[in-house]
Figure 1 (cartoon, rainbow, N blue to C red):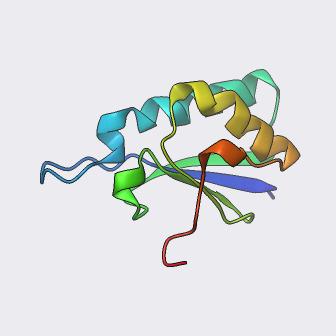
Figure 2: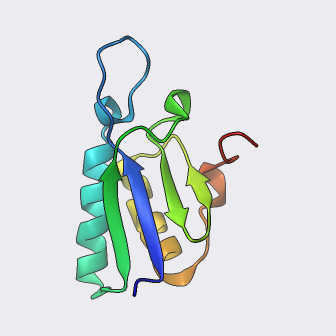
Length: 101
């Protein structure tokens, strides 16, 4: 069973509303996965998904079971996300309030 699970929004849309997929979120998910593999970490999951909701704060992601939400992610944030997934230390500078809070 995995300790933590990262969901990364990769939603694409053509409505004019911001979309995480157009902002490089798939590359962020791929880099997190690559770094986890380099560290030999097999007890963490990374899943791309459709819209997480806070489109204007994208690219967005959420870590479960910690319920830590992230926004304005870039590929440079991948190492810190990996640290959170392995060690449980959130990336404070990128945290968002959970939607609906």
